[in-house]
Image (cartoon, rainbow, N blue to C red; front, side, top):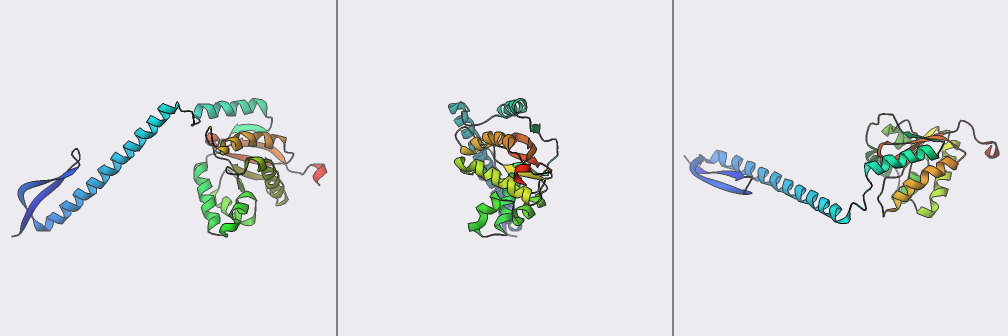
Length: 230
């Protein structure tokens, strides 16, 4: 009967150890396969822990100067409640997925329907494709989405006005602006901070609220257009 040496993976030493006692050849491959699998898992976990430690070290060295904490977001939202009459705080609706995931799925869905050259327009206007993809995600009753987190800083006001006007013209009642949260050096943070005031000043807006973590804004449109626009 043919035999082979037993082998096992030592997680602490991260290597395969051979046992001098005989083992049937039929079991050798299975043991080696298991050892390789355990080795891959252990190495993957080591890399993960190293990345976590590196991030923590960087944050400690930088004094968390780039990250926006949950406390800062909550304080900012509370301040908006005091300043803006149309702002009603954080949504109480239970969402099917995080806003960041919805944004990714939205972009992925649009890519499957339109040419790459038309993607930006589809993400910034309430087109039929925009509405179709976004409504499939069932995000807080919103009917279209403006993915403006990467919009040019200077053109944000025009982008918001155009999206709201086109949404109203299309008969939509509730829409979403996805801004992202950003950090202290990224421009999408400025988008997040500027958008509430733009919505407050817009005559088409009845009220608006934030998604959890302020990653997006849900806007309710007025039931009738202002007289000057009719």
